[in-house]
Image (cartoon, rainbow, N blue to C red; front, side, top):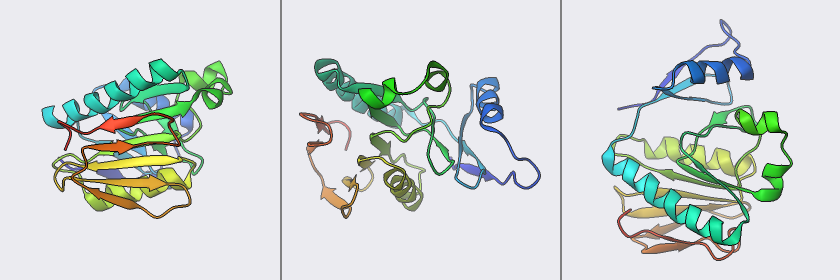
Amino acid sequence: MTAYVICLKPTIDMTDDQFYELCGNNPELMFERNAMGDLVIMPPVGGESGGREADVIGDLIIWNRQTLLGKVFSSSSGFKLPNGADRSPDAAWVRLDRWEALTAAQQQKFPPLCPDFVVEIRSATDSLTALQEKMREYISNGAVLGLLINPKGKQVEVYRSDQSVVVLNQPSQVDCNPELPGFVLNLSGIL
């Protein structure tokens, strides 16, 4: 299935609270908003893609519980990026000091920050170009490391702030140092 984009402006100028309420009133749907305020309706992923997300999040949680350096988020978590977009990466991690600097109200809704680390996993119906654009958006909004995992192409694109994208062909793992000290993502069963 394809993501659908609905242009709301100038007819509707949805506030952040209204967008949060829309998401809460429709829990069976996955919404994002791009920087122009357009509503993006994301289809649910299939079993293979959902399993890949779970594998990545599981590895990230295990590492984070050992290091206590931050907070891990699933694809159900939305983030209000500095450019105004509301995005939900497949997996995300935020440094603990940045998370704790937010108020309780900010932590409760869509945190107003870009995660430090984001992962997007291409499903069978995802446009690679659209995901690459999303990764560039994360980096330009403050992410220090991003992984675009493309099982179809057996590749991982590694995005780092102030560096060119590195494409890894059929890697068995991705070393996320120094941004996530000691974290190496195992890709067996994911690619």
